[in-house]
Image (tube, rainbow, N blue to C red):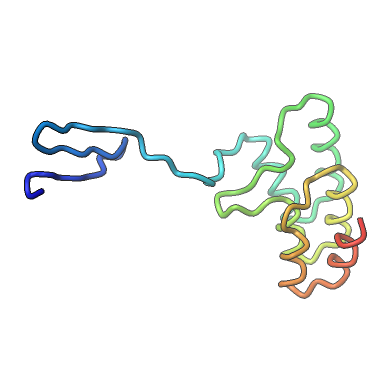
Amino acid sequence: MADEKKHLDGVGLQIEGPGISFKRPVEMPNLPKSLSLEEKKYLLAVERGDAANVRRILQRAHRRHNIDMNCADSLGRGALVLAIEGENLEMVELLVVMGVETRDALLHAINSEFVEAVELLNYK
């Protein structure tokens, strides 16, 4: 159809043609949701290796349910992946003990050749 046009207008997909007008929102699956300030502080503390602060944040989260301890940054990295990237075994252990979901952290530890984390995650 030569008359038909398609374009993204920032809100959705719009298709127009003879007798056709269709508009629907574009869905972006698997994009991380925006983080709250507390979640940003949590991931930053993990990345910096601040175990005491991470423990405090997670204990508060268990009581108040004010953060998602399985949240991910804009690159899709969760707390366990950040701890593995920093090769911080103490942090990995703390996160596992506090109940953070392991998801694909074991695969990331294998890929990073972080043997101690592989052992900890494989036998948790």
